[in-house]
Structure formats: C-alpha cells, structure tokens
Figure 1: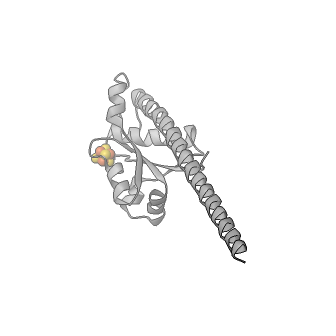
Figure 2 (figure 1 turned 30 degrees about the vertical axis):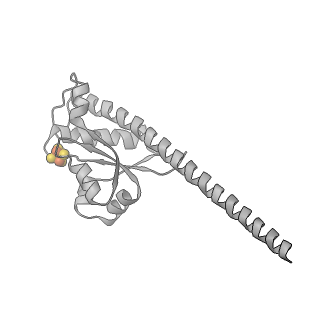
Figure 3 (figure 1 turned 90 degrees about the vertical axis):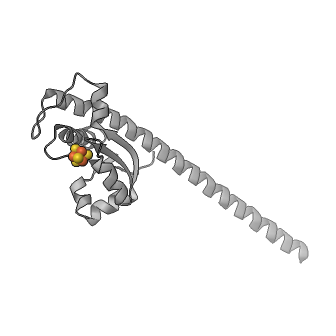
Length: 167
Ligand code: SF4
C-alpha cells in the first residue's frame, strides 16, 4: 500500500465541548487507531504560519475535524494550500449518536469520550479509503510510466531498424 501519511487537523475549539471532542477524536486516530498512517497537525500551528505545519498540509492529504459549522480546520487547511481529502463534523457524528451527549471542556464526560471514539472509528475507516485510492492512483501512474517506457523502447527499436534498412 502507498506509504503517504494522512494529516489529521482537529479544530480543537477552545472553550467548547464539541471542540474538545475533535481533539480527543484526533488523538484516538493518531495514537491508537492509525498511528503508522497519520500525522497530527495542530490548527494553532497553521494559524501561526508555522512552516513545518504548512508544508505538511501542502504535501499530504488532510482530514479535518470541526466542532461547529464555522469549520475553522477545513478553512485553514485550504487557506494554507492543502487538500482536504475528507472533512468531519462533530455535530454530524452527534446526530448519528444522540445517546452520546458531550459535556465538559478540559475533561469530557463519558458521553463526550464515547462520541470522540465513535468519530475516530469513522475517521479511521475514511483513512483506509483514502490510502486505498492513493495506492490505486500510484498503481495507475506506475502503469502509465511503464507504458510510456515500453512505447519509447518500441519507437527506439523502430528507428534503429529503419536506420538499418537505410544503411
Ligand atoms: S470550528 Fe467551531 S468549535 Fe472549532 S474552532 Fe472553529 S468556531 Fe471553535
């Protein structure tokens, strides 16, 4: 499989339970579920214009996790020149899991932890799909490179046999 990493950018909204859920979900993905396939980039680093963070989102596919419809993480990745491969919203996850109501900011309640984990599971599945499509793209480009090499080898053969005929 293609070994390109996927960047995870949570909005980590300060002072909001939903923002805390984005951060917890991101940690669950990067530390537990897909540690070898992902890399965390803090939104604050993008906002500050940190070169390493900007380079990561410019070069790698990004998954964003937003705590509300203002979608700060998604907007900032795009403004930093990145490509958002998938965007997730905590509110959408909550609509699917109404029994997991988040509360708390510095520390989430049990519902918030469960919601973060459920969202992290969805994101992990999305990352697998992104990786599969990257592998397919890579295989396609490898095939077309192989075809180009074969064609140029054939045309080299043709021209050398034409030269031989003319000699
Ligand atoms: S997306 Fe919403 S919760 Fe997250 S940082 Fe922006 S305003 Fe805050």
